[in-house]
Image 1 (cartoon, protein in one colour):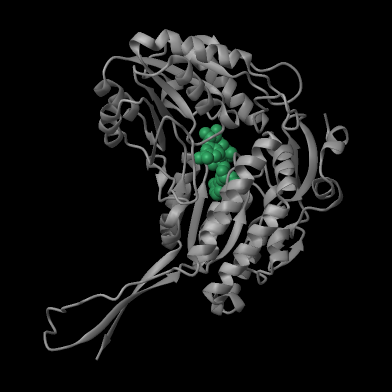
Image 2 (cartoon, rainbow, N blue to C red; image 1 turned 180 degrees about the vertical axis):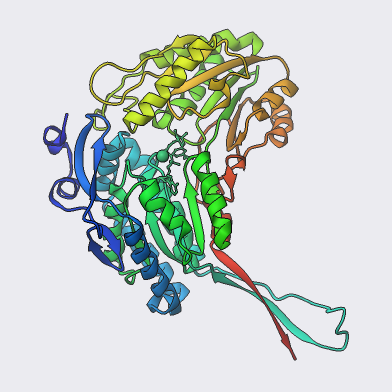
Amino acid sequence: MDLSTIRHLLSERAANFLTQREHRLLIDGQWVPAASGATFATLNPATEEVITQVAAANAEDVDRAVRAARKAFDTGPWSTIRPAERQRLMLKLADLVEDHAQALAEIESVDNGKSAGIARAVDIALTIDFLRYMAGWATKIEGSTNAVSVPFAPQAEFISYTRREAVGVVAAIVPWNFPLLVATWKLGPALAAGCTVVLKPAEQTPLTALYLGELINEAGFPPGVVNIVTGDGLDAGAPLTRHPLVDKISFTGSTEVGKIIGHASVDNMTRFTLELGGKSPVIVLDDCNPAEAAAGAANAIFFNHGQVCCAGSRLYVQKKMFDNVVSEIGKIASSMTLGHGFDAGAQMGPLVSQEQLDRVCNYIDIGRSQGAKVVAGGARHAGKGYYVQPTVLADVDHSKRVVQEEIFGPVLTAMPYDSLDEVAAWANDSPYGLGASIWSNNLSKVHRLIPKIKAGTVWVNCHSVLDPAMPFGGYKQSGIGRDMGRASLDAYLETKSVFIAV
Ligand code: NAI
Ligand code: MG
């Protein structure tokens, strides 16, 4: 399969975008090549073939983009734009994304490897809903009037209130697993708050952000409000996070890079939110139906080929049903069909890159060498494309690397437990704390467990459910701050306290 062989499966819009246009940087409302003229290739993970070339930004381009965002924020039409107008533009953009949903889903599929159908139903659908949700907040930003009693000025009277003000220029750095969706998690609250943005998509998956850039122009956002610089982490990402004219960084990606960004931010006192890795536990209690629990746990790890920050990668099953549940998951894993994103019969696609494939296969080898039993999968899938078999590892000690470290692929580690206290301790025995799921209908046990779990989201009888109204983010090394929900808007606003002596 290459683009010519799937050309007939693509909508006209996706085909035109993928094959006929130059992919440039969006700076100050204009599509421009990188100052150096450099480009990089983006690949189709299902075929390992080049889809197209994209402009490779470096520090010079990043500087132009940040200055454009700065100007739009400080003196451009955006600086005086009314909240209702921001809301209208965001709703217009949401309508355009909806109109172009099919093309966006197809491009995401070709660039990332995920199923086009799932991209449409999950990534793009949530993108649209989230833009609309956040558009509503643009007109609902509120401070407070505060009753003060200044102790050292007992005779004086003050009118005191707080104003919420846009934080300024936002650097949004996003990963490749949900490229458009996560970009929107940053753009949505930034635009609702009145910020301007420089967006850097992941180098593996730059295309849907560029398509979105065209829709942003079409919606009528003033030049410089959203700028898009494509390129890799060191040449484009690092200069963006260190730029003194950036006021806030919003990052989703690895914990390793998140820490680098956190350190760099403090030098300029740039505000930051970080949504990082995870190693989320799936806890099956003994009242569960083993087949249903197995189906839920399989979905928790294999959705998006395991390339999900909150993937349920550690499975804990009560001892008496452990063998039963694990053998059921093994059967599900072994029966899954792998195929490219336009193959309607495929249940899982390729990983995003050779790097991820190597990383995941290496972890499977480490698991084996540290004593894990391979219940299902355990190998790269033969042929072209970055496919790895859905893999289930059992009999693995809790301290081992495959239990402790984020693999970010379709690899599950399964462990038996005895008591609720034991499983709560193990669930928390991780540097991460992004998500967790509990599978049970025993209300009192579930409610005893929820407060014990150190994670930003706890799901009960489901996993990886997300909604625009619910904040998403991590405890511990899974990050700082929240995406989505009202909580995410707050991270793009400063609070100004005003005292007026009357
Ligand atoms: P990464 O953290 O290197 O990349 C994420 C984004 O950060 C990309 O846009 C990248 O260009 C940018 N970036 C990289 N280095 C940077 C730097 N020094 N300064 C500024 N920006 C920089 O993640 P990568 O290498 O793609 O994946 C490695 C591992 O990270 C994965 O195997 C997975 O464990 C984890 N990861 C977690 C994600 C999540 O959703 N929390 C998403 C992607 C990866
Ligand atoms: Mg990287």
